[in-house]
Structures are given as structure tokens and as C-alpha cells.
Image 1 (tube, rainbow, N blue to C red):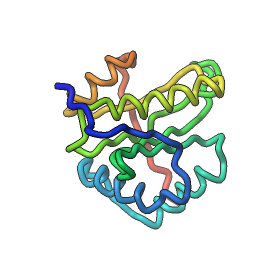
Image 2: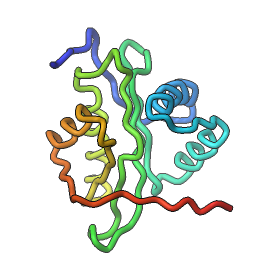
Image 3: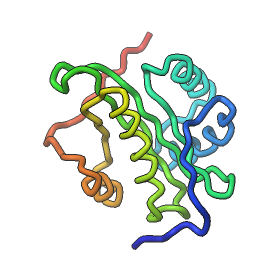
Image 4: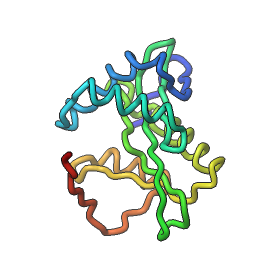
Length: 156
């Protein structure tokens, strides 16, 4: 069901000035995804992302000045995907603001940045137990490659 927001949504690139709002949203996202939230590590990672734009970008969605969602895009390089590629690393909209097109607007901003940068492939991952997210991504043109995302942590 589509739930239009009462006020206009503004999606803008996030900067260090938005850090507190961003961390608040990230805290919610990480809790819902059962991910460890370490503010010091996230502050350092965001600072590095902002320092080197080739790594990616962050967007913040606001309604009437209130932060309601965010997205993080990280860039890499892949021969399979013709050079620079990008990954939707995080996409979150507060539960009371979902189904209003906010996530789609954040994805639009990411896709526009990718196109402007010559990036031809945009990837993401979605949990198996997130059918709403999967429907959004399929509607937006993402395709399941029938592959498993696997990770090996390289501890220092």
C-alpha cells in the first residue's frame, strides 16, 4: 500500500554536518538488522567516505527538516561488470515513513550518481526474510543472480 508523506521529501547528499542525524538513523537500522553498532567505527568510516568521493556517497532523506531515511553507496571495480561498479551498502527508511516512495527517491539519487560517474552496474543485497525490500528492488529493475553473497572478515 502506498502511504504518501504529508510533506515534501528532500533527498540530498549527506555531509559531516549531518552526522548526528545519520548516526541516529543508522542506530535504528543496525538494531533492526541485528548488526553490531559501533559509533566510533562508523564515524571513522563515514569520515573516510566523505574524504574520498571515489569510495562512494551518502544521502539523507528529510521531511520538514526531520531525517527519515538514508542510503550509502560504495564503489569498487569489477572486470565482470565493465569497470567501476557500485553497491547499495545501506538503505533505510524509518518504519513509520515506509511505502511512501522515500526509498525509491534515495535509489534514484544513487542511480543518477552512478550514471554521471560512468558506473554501469549497481548491486545490493537483501535479506531472505525481507519480502517488502525484495519487491521494491525487483520493481526498480534489480535481478537475482542466483548467487550467494559470501564474506570473509580479514581481522588485523
